[in-house]
Length: 452
Image 1 (cartoon, rainbow, N blue to C red):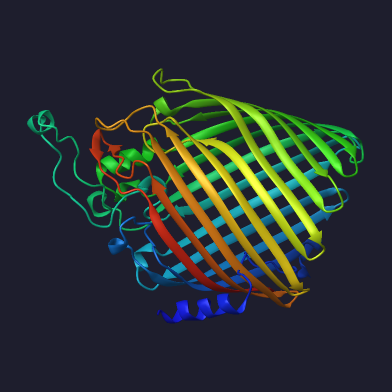
Image 2: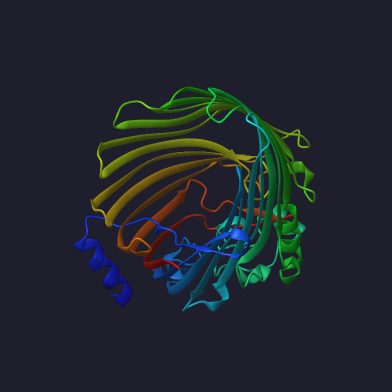
């Protein structure tokens, strides 16, 4: 057995379960101009059994990894106004595949101003430099090795051969994770006193996603990446009703206008009407529920199927003891797939349990079952079979607070995915390539988080 696997499995056997991301009590330092500065660093060492999310176990690359996640916050206050600048980094190095190393960065500014008893405003700006691992996102189902025969001629197509072989990383010169930049800016105006029963809020935001270094890839894939870049404008009107100190209702009107500059057929408008409730039902039971209707339409694609239906996000927490909590969760969301447009209806059901064995030792156990139904407007090739993916994820872990500012964690996560259309082809540059959808993946890790 791999030495790290032996170590983590021993930890699993010795503890009732295993866990979540470490949390530590921040240590504040006084900076210039009265600013409060907080810094923490998490170091992680682990093993990933399927780095490239491959369905075929013979193509799976297993690798040990070491990672570091620094976080920096600078907070300032002036009267009732508050400002915060934060940075979050994520750096990882893989022993068996240095090509998949990455360094992600996220910068964020949050500001809040209260102009009078009833008038307040919040501003948020976030800029992220991130990555998509090979085998997920735009390269979902791509293979490490496969059939790289040339695309068929017209004569071949008449004989029934319509695919250009397999979508492999080498075929499209994908030798490293895909890097992207994402930004978001938003403002929220609030009318209502902090302790008033009712409050009205208006919000506007703009999001932007673009891929970096597209010129490094094969020409057709470069164009395909550009076609997945989008911009989105969002407007929200919300009314809050605090009926008691333990119950609050929320009524929301929201619209999202998403545009794909290089692929207008994917442009869509979304309209939401949402009702939400957050309530302490009993001394041991709490509910946070949001249920709403959604209408999604594709403004430039008459063949695309619109969606009318319900979205929900439900969380029911039961805490029979002060040191033990069980949560049941369920959600349904509509999102855009990669490729030729349409939408994905994603339903999630799960359970999470957290137990504190002492003030400094906690264990967690979680299970999530996800079903993704794909409703795509264009089918690549002649096979129009419906695609449905079933994903199962479970994890466990133990967290030990050596001291309030130092946390040691031991984690295990497993995920597997199967598809009703595992070989669904993908259209890149007007040509169809076969994929291998699905995976089986485990990750084991040790973490140490310190607030400095």
